[in-house]
Length: 339
Ligand SMILES: [Zn+2]
Image 1 (tube, rainbow, N blue to C red):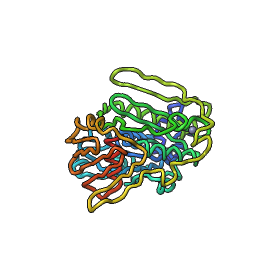
Image 2: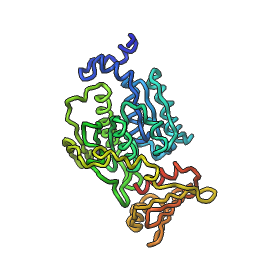
Image 3: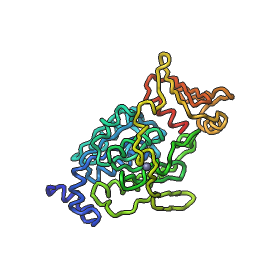
Image 4: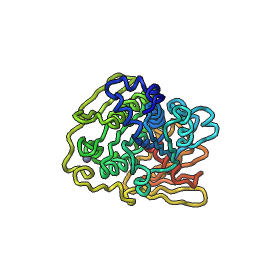
């Protein structure tokens, strides 16, 4: 560490949990943030300010005006230019801390690119908005022994949980299967901006502890918070399940390409998402979507318009998204409105 670094990070070095050794470890570390929206853009800024030497940001979306109330790193110019979030964040982080190396990847994390994008991470932060990607991260992280930190927020409620492979329960020990049906999302249920920063802060604190080598002997916790109705509760993560398909049997089904609902181009400007085992209650979905756009539904199909896109959803979970030929955008819209 040189004199400028020692001065820049002096208040962090004074904090005994980090110290000079911890700071040196942060400077030599690589953190990967998956999803650079509400949670991820906060992670990215905090990690850059803390001096984490290499930061990779993965996101498939563009900045929109409706992101700005909670996505701390972006501004009106980014939304007006519809910049990819990974690139807008990369640019902003260079202004915050020009000495860290930031790589913004405009990509949809899939079984086929997960090794390339996450392979040399020292820690992975979950800034995603969907369970497909979280179960993929969990399988990959456990298979390679890379710690990761799960986080989620909707409404005024959120939770965070670190996963240290071989030491703590993994995501599938706690939630054996992804939830079925339609889940509340920030797009359908709204979100309070400060629950996002609170959850993201918990995740970054765990990531810094992991990178500084301060995890040994710690008990890991699930933190659940509701910043509107009150209540912050931390409970130790449950014990590892020896029968867990991921960390017990080491089966890793989400790393197999077939585990993801396939996506195909369908016509000139439309994408079909072939969900196979996700029955959807179309009338319940209509009730959620009526709050945010124009929607029509009967028992056979639901059509939802969110210009420039139009989404048609079928009871088996299949969907056709018109208005794009980009499969990443189609998956993103599906995750936003169906969870
Ligand atoms: Zn497990």
